[in-house]
Image 1 (tube, rainbow, N blue to C red):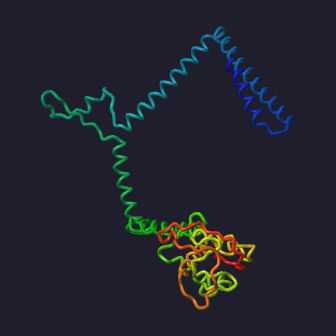
Image 2 (cartoon, rainbow, N blue to C red; image 1 turned 180 degrees about the vertical axis):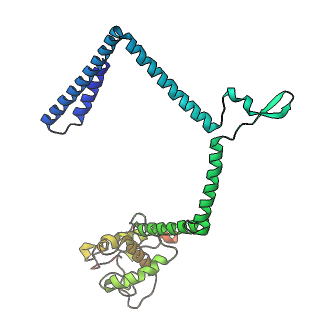
Image 3 (cartoon, one colour; image 1 turned 135 degrees about the horizontal axis):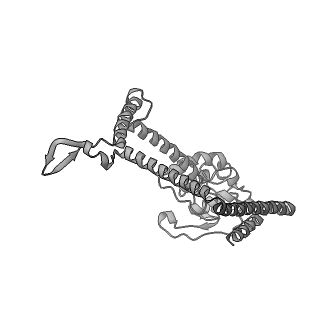
Length: 303
């Protein structure tokens, strides 16, 4: 009964992991069942022959069982003697030979037990380890001491830090960008602005083809997130290309922070105001409205 259950379970598994070819699956399943049937037949025949042997030749069966018991006992004694040798144990029959003479107090005799093998092995291996350690770390310098390991791990950490910073530098988007209070991003963005933005907005943000970036009037919002979004996606209907195809998110963040530094500056020949005036910025502690204007200015820029 158990064999049938096992066969049904295995056959179900084979069907579930079939090759995809029906004929191959049937063939493999048939071979599997034939092998199981042959195995079952062999087990049955062996049991039948053993039963016949017990009836016709009982002395042979008894001799076989005796040899098996002796072999089992010999194996047990072998492991027992090995354990006693490792632990330094002696049989009780040899106790009299281990008694220390003239060393009896209040009827208590002391035995001269040998040191266990495991203890000697541990002792000598610790000596060998100490010598090898001394040669590797102090004589030949093949291994790293604590200071060297510390320096190596710090170097690895520095590499990992730089890789993380390189990845996080490009993790800016219009939802996470914040004003850089340190001014580092703005300083880096000045060169990018001069190279990519000055042609339309002027070298000082005064506005030429594009709108003036120095006043408080904005066409698409004047907060850092609004500026980042405008630079990233551009204003195609006004001729401003999406800069996400040219600049990395980190570079867009730098340009956006630099544009904020142009606010309220007084360049020569500023272009006229366009868009909606923003009088209070979040970076200044105010709550600025999300200003978007329908003003029909011929601008191509972020403002």
